Image: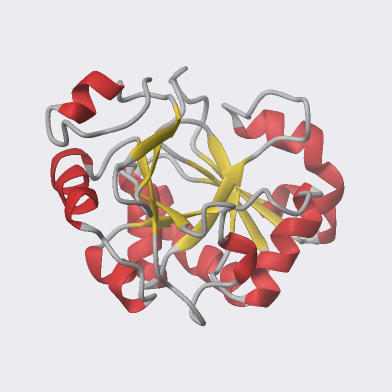
Length: 223
């Protein structure tokens, strides 16, 4: 398979629709997609052991560093047995879809352990990226997500950067790239741990803590 056939335009509505079937087949085969998000390009795949291991292998990810899940509908969360606690529901109602990642409890026996963080939860974000949400809805389930870069290299903001770094995986057919051009510079999502009695900021990002406290005043930590 030629490498260029694994780099697919994903910009206009027509290109997005044309890319869907190939992307779904790639996910079904347990392989890794590179795709645009509301922040940077991400790597991800289906939420099963085989697909998660393929992503671990591609990224060379060390144990203890989980991936997050991207969703495009609330039922995707409940089907996995994840729980939106009272304050997590308030955050979701106000800021989803958007650059807010919530670490949620639950999902035992439905979510691979490799996706569970040190606090015991699973990180979830409802993406506002319209084309990516279209793909996730067509897939019907969440997809995993991690930044599309090698260790020590900034996260990719264009498909060209991914091709330069990962041409071997593209050439093998392991990695398929959805090319939406260059993304605008933006902050990463804010990450809030929702597994405890009080929510806690564990990574500052696009939504400052002061804004989050308008919905949940008891938030711990600053962004």
